[in-house]
Figure (cartoon, rainbow, N blue to C red):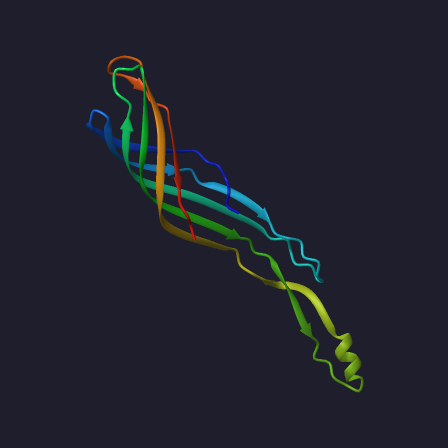
Length: 172
């Protein structure tokens, strides 16, 4: 799972095309979120090392939106937004280095070859190990984006506009 919550920010530019309709384009960037996982404990002999994995994800979102707004003249004006976004997800997973078990047989042979064969099976941990590896994948997808805002007029020219937006997309 790569579930995590992060903050982000964006820049949007828009204009009124009608007293109730707006269009806008924007870019949003989310902070990189990181999650750590401890691998499963496997009951075998010799026990493998427990894998501690680190995964991080970041998103960049480019959107175009169309908005419908309630009539002007009221102190609070509601707006409804819908549009399409292009989402670029970057997933990075770091795999640590850990030693591998070394299974080998001794080269002894003699009169008691059968006994030597079975008694010479050794299991040891040697310097053989996997190097640390980082895997990065980038995925592009499209998203349906919906939004809701409420413009609260402070003066005839200044308003505070809290809003909420949600995008739904799928990554492979």
